Image 1 (tube, rainbow, N blue to C red):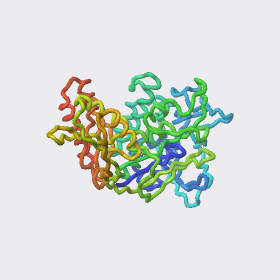
Image 2 (cartoon, rainbow, N blue to C red):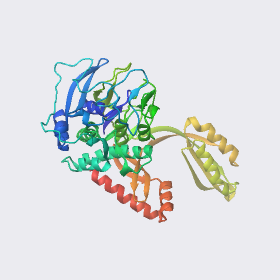
Image 3 (tube, rainbow, N blue to C red):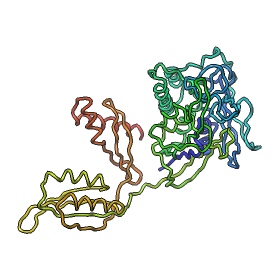
Image 4 (tube, helix red, strand yellow):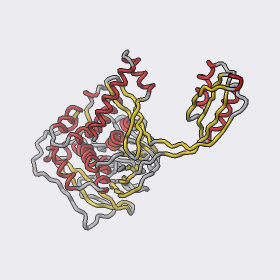
Amino acid sequence: MKILYYDCFSGISGDMNLGALIDVGVDPDYFMGEIAKLNLNGEYEVRIAKGLKKGITGTKVDVILKQRKSFQMIEHKHDHEHEHDHGHEHEHDHGHEHDHDHGHDHGHDHGHEHEHDHEHGHAHDHGHDHGHEHTHEHGEHHNRNVSDIEKIIMNSSLSDAVKQLSMKMFMKVAVAEAKVHGKPIDEVHFHEVGAIDSIVDIIGAAICIDYLHVDKIMASSVQVGGGFVKCAHGLIPVPAPATVEILRGIPIKSGIVPFETTTPTGAAILAAVVEEFTDKTEFTIERVGYGIGNRELEIPNVLRVYLGTEEKREIKEQAYILETNIDDMNPELYNYVEEQLFENGASDVFKTPIMMKKGRPAIKLSVLVNEEREQDVLEVLFTETTSLGIRKYQVDKIMLQRDFVKLSTRYGEVTIKNSYYQGKLIKFKPEYEDCKKRAQENQVSISKIYREINKVYEGSLDDDK
């Protein structure tokens, strides 16, 4: 299984993501050819060069607007007179100001050539000037909405996979913006991602991810930074409101530096593509890439990504079976006992009808538990049942690799448990409680819910083949 892993120890922004993915293996010429399919050639140029940050060599990507004053910049144009809806990132509360023409909260003005710690003499400059006149009126890009973004993407000649992934990323931002501002999604106008540089960042991310063709995307906890930023509304905390909304349900870390390290664009990329967030890198690393940021921090302002392989093997663990024979307990109590056993750490509980001496029918109550929770389970067995003694023996558990995904259906969202053998998905199962809830909410039979899930999910699996 081919893995792409985001190590977000210094956060993530759109331009750093592009740099990291190109550094790890995306062909720059391929990227430039694909991004040109947006048909926005006269508005920008892209420059790709090698750079150095705190002794780490990586790739720097700059999206340079040809008439920058015509745009409201992505992610934190500082010191302008007009007002962000987000209201964040105008002036850091550290006594110095930053003019973010590219805007990924990294502090340099992108109008000049790259100001790396060091620029290698062999750095290739992919200046992508398409030579067309920029004909848009001043301010035209300030108020792009979801429909405008969708037209740009769908009218391009990009592949369907790239179009779909690009829209998924933009919708992460749209939903967050709508909630922050209390507006329907169709009424939200993008200030953060409506400018051409951020459009290139997000669609470029989809192009690069599609090019790498990995089986699974993972990421570490996301460093968001700290401190406050000053805007027309006053001081607001880092991370900004939209970033917080996008990162809901995603593990974060904060405070490593008193600046914003993860932007809404970077957060949206992660939220759209990452299947698993973990700080464990339990795979074989084959390639490493670094995306260079602009800000000079105490830590390297870079995004690190890994390409690696993971051999999916069955999980083997040791556990204990605790069991007891019961012939004198009210059968109504078993349900309560089972609930208490699960709440106290049992991995599984099962009952087997048996015949004891003198022809007495009985139940053999068996509990699977790990060593750490064994004592808790024993306490339940002794205090909540009529048992006077427990048998204990060690067993080996051999389990398929599993993960959980969310599936959207016309009846609502449900959780699917996937099971893998030697890295291949061999079975899946909807979570019963989700199916039950959807059936009750929609007043349909639960079997209809299961049929809909199987149809939608199997169809998505066929599309991935």
